[in-house]
Length: 332
Image (cartoon, rainbow, N blue to C red; front, side):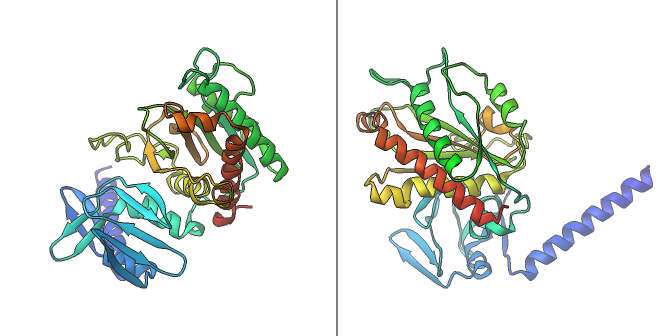
């Protein structure tokens, strides 16, 4: 057993060396800061082929034919093609190496967005599981005239209709006003194969809070976007990190900057693609997202949510995002 352990340790060390050598051969330049592994933005630019680098105020912009990436030192906000992503770690700066982006943000956000066909667990996709949040005695967010549970279900029904017309099989975790635990929702979802999972919600907050945000599961070793402290939980989640972010990108992008948002004049505020450890996302065995479709605590957005046209816009945009995701990953 001791000999095996020694051999195994040697193998691991050799493997790590080979990975490092491979990374260097590809032109990656790594920098360690406060126990976090970073990649220089210059090597990222070189690897992905960004042809132009320029300054816009305090931000740095990188451009190539199909993509535009914008970051700012000390900020966790990154924009790709105008869609906001909340990074796991702020953009750092080195006096010699220049701007730095965390290695986990490169592997878990940048690469899946820029190279979706390289996502390893791209698969067949013929089923969409729609999860209308809350239900029964759990009303969710509310105001004087609306209950979140009802709006979630109305959007989900519209989305189901559009997906069925597009040729997908559709599963609803609930089709009526009934209460389901989070684990029951997960259990329903995990009965199916070749699927993605979309949980639909509306938000609550201050009267000035506004906009749409899409959540995926936070990768192991990173914190929730809402947490100010880095928590290195061992929770591995559903192991679909790259697929999750690709799905979130397609859906949030269509909600914020898609054709429907332009033609219908919606253009909601972009609160970003974020990561969290919501229970309903943790043990799902499919690519999964949770979409917050607006704030019921905001007078304007609450009024919009009560209109059929806005709910149809939400459903149409989410449907378009799922179609775009399938095409980007080359799913059958």
